[in-house]
Image (cartoon, rainbow, N blue to C red):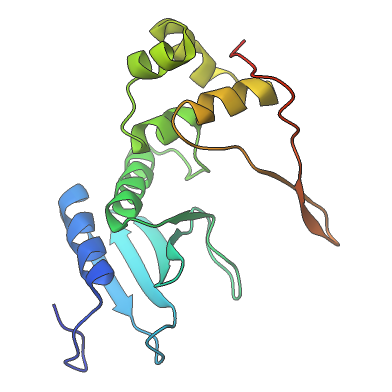
Amino acid sequence: MQNRTGLDLPDPVVEFSNCLAEVIPGIEIEVDQPTDAQGEWWFDVVHDGFRSSVAWRPDHGFGVFTSSPGFGDRPDEIYRPPALAAKRLGQLVDQANRSVESSPLWLNEIRQLRDTPQTSLGEKLSISQASISAFERREDIRISSLRSYLEAMGGRLEMRVVFDDFVANVEISPNKKPSIQ
């Protein structure tokens, strides 16, 4: 694949475009390349009324905007593998097709992106698949339970506090191994 200038596109850009076309047949992708080789690439993604922007930097990965970006805004979510970014955009297109407003990831979407069945996750947490299903539908979740759920898939929970005049990470002390309740 080549850009307007005839120069080769970076492999991750080509892979992302190919994965998007595979995950979302008929998708339209417009690519804006940076003037600096280490700069930020921009993708405008359109499919049947769905629109999203994706930013890619070689040192960061693919930043997906789940809300409309404004000047200077940063992506809502970042994915290092191109295929994972394409898979997430597939979830967002599916939400749009169901007339659901694009939203941040919820637990079942995280699990699906990780290709982890509820049964497998339940085994790791020593609980039933039905308990995992019920947990994913809850609106109010204990932090310790959420941490266990994410750690069972190889992730970790990080939190931050956001005020008008500052943003900071919040430390969550892992005193003991919690269980999903």
